[in-house]
Image 1: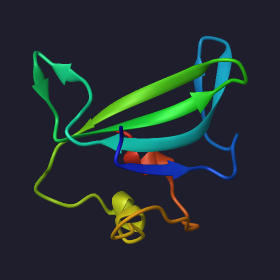
Image 2: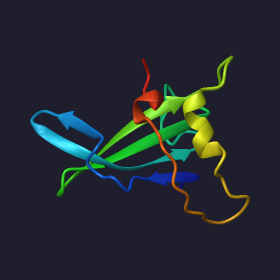
Image 3: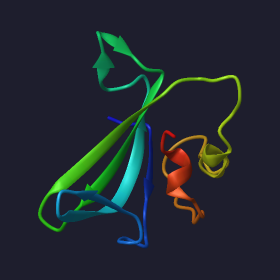
Image 4: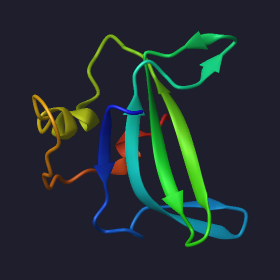
Length: 101
């Protein structure tokens, strides 16, 4: 399974275009360690951005490694983590801040 999931109430605002199809961002979640590997090596964490065009899913996987500085984009998520179980909170995020440059 995965550890943390963030669902988007405003589906359709953030999209991924592949060819001539637009996929709407539904949710993203994290795996720790990464679910996938490069040359047999896991990343510390992997974020999956799950998109849907109505019929098909498109998932963008992003490897995350610990750096010298914290990425402030994650702070609204980490601040709302429950100690145990599930919680639902409204938070404002700029999804572009999670993407690699």
